[in-house]
Image 1 (tube, rainbow, N blue to C red):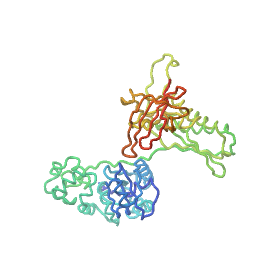
Image 2 (tube, rainbow, N blue to C red):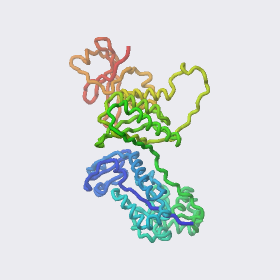
Image 3 (cartoon, rainbow, N blue to C red):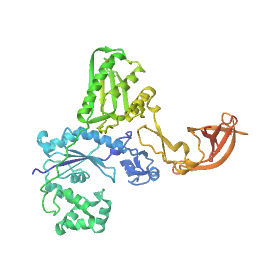
Image 4 (cartoon, helix red, strand yellow):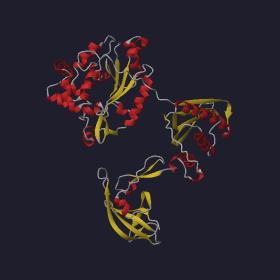
Length: 499
């Protein structure tokens, strides 16, 4: 059985992919839960360490800080995986739950002949990664390659399994970042390197490690060295390597024989391209919620249109209705010479059971597809922000106690007792409006305080907010909810009562 060969590409600066590039002498830290999860060299030299609180890090290094964007990191890894798929069909994304170290693992044993050997293949991959700081590790197992990436050995092309095991034996156990509790136990019992673990297993078998540190850790060790549980022979039956599955997307383009200047002339081309999309989705049992149109003139100037639907669709009809609604409210920016249709975000189509109730459907309420059509048409005519629902947020400050969410997104409607029984206005302003206090309180008329005060406090971890709330009546009988800011003494109107 041919031995496997794994190449690890660790990206030590991955947390910075979402943020601007700074000079090397500028200290930069990335935070997660107000703790440093990444620091560049300048910050480390100033005394910053991983896990340090944000305030201490700023005092030590005068660093620029950012909040970690895990989603952006994952998107970047996905893009790299798709790019490196050109070298091997076996590409795995490696992420740690403990530290921000992430990267890719490539199984390259089956690709060596194609690219002229190990050294030439690794050189080609390094050239492809030239713009991204990368640490490389090579071994006969995934975990082994990842651990050796911290040593960043140069690759000669003559390595073998014995070389990899020898290098792994010198790896300090402190490098097992994903096993902090097990590492602490090993250190207390005198283990310093992976070689110490392998010698212990040689003398007493893997059961000694399993009994002391558990099944999961013992399996990790055997995977790391690529051997059976008795630690005496290479594994006879290896788990198949999962191939990388590139994300599917749809793209179509149409070049016109002559420039189109009337929107009506686009109707038929748009319909034909959307029909192609619908056929693509049905054949693969996929669905999409968003499509992108791009129009070009003969000089390659572009115009972009986006169509979004709240419920995934695997047919073209709704998208056709929505793009026509958008187009009828505008004019073509130029004579259109070509048009492109792109759908990047595809998902598995979920079949829905259909009811066998043959009663009069006209008497029933709107179904989800009807509501999706209504939402799409309203958004197309009025804009993305015109259609939403309100969800409760756990916050004492009234204007921060709710948020707008998409109509089909889950919303929290469970209110605490204070909101169910206390007097609260029907209409709450998004931003409190200032009121004047001279001899009397004034907001579009003189206000008389009726009920209060009710003290509301919050946001102690940021800028502490403390307010005294009152129910007031304006001279025309309108009842309003007002408050006095304790720190500044200013008055504001928070909302209006109905009736």
